Image 1 (cartoon, rainbow, N blue to C red):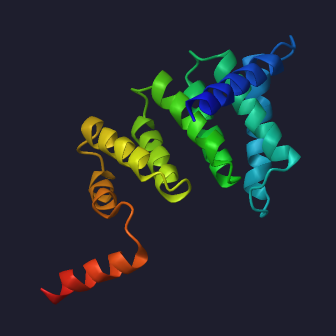
Image 2 (image 1 turned 45 degrees about the vertical axis):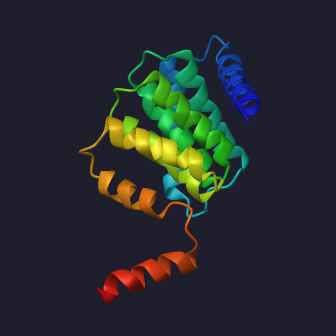
Length: 176
């Protein structure tokens, strides 16, 4: 699994650096292309899927974040890349982008969100409850007063339970 993650991240970095080798790819130009594509996404009623425009927007987010990592928009674009991958149901890439955000921008405004989202994906998509537990516990350790902390404590208490177990627990609680 670590092997796959390493090559996924390496591929994303390579893709980003390759796309910015063109001398016309200035930060201003890339931001402009991103803004244009984002506005097209907001106007369209189509669901997010891996079509050419979504993949191009993802490429631009990645290219900007990897080419200009000290720019204030780099973490935001990593977050948006993760959200876009999540919307396209490419959960491995989503987790990779959220991990890059968490590792490179641990003090930024969405640092708590990316840890939560990684845990949520591991719990609900990969059914990797142990990894989800580690991420949720890390969240609570780093952000104990965050608005999501209560929800994460509930998620931890119910992690890995079947629907039947959850119903039984709910019925027991209400019987008291």
